[in-house]
Length: 111
Image (tube, rainbow, N blue to C red; front, side):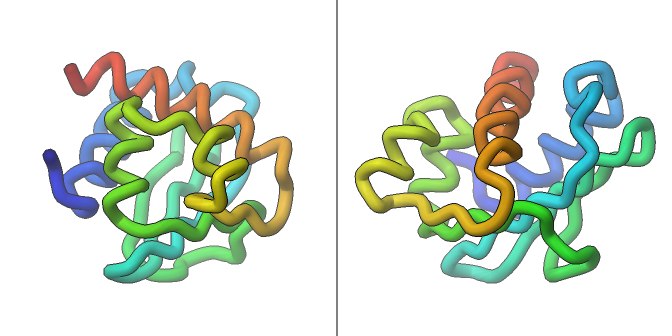
């Protein structure tokens, strides 16, 4: 299983390679994980990922690193994680739901 930095690096590569996957999503997602904070900044063709808090988040997701890895690998459904308390969401819940689709499309390219 990839480490967290590698996953964010792969997500960044996937969104730069095919920005159409994030079409219509302009938001800052922050992931508060065991080993620190990470962000995915969706801003059209200028989308990127970052370690630490670069921008003010629109949606903050708090979970442990293992569950994040499972979610990124498609082994853990975001809605199920939220309902079972493995994922806490602060901010725009609609954006959290959109993220599921973005991670799913990243997941298809990573395999």
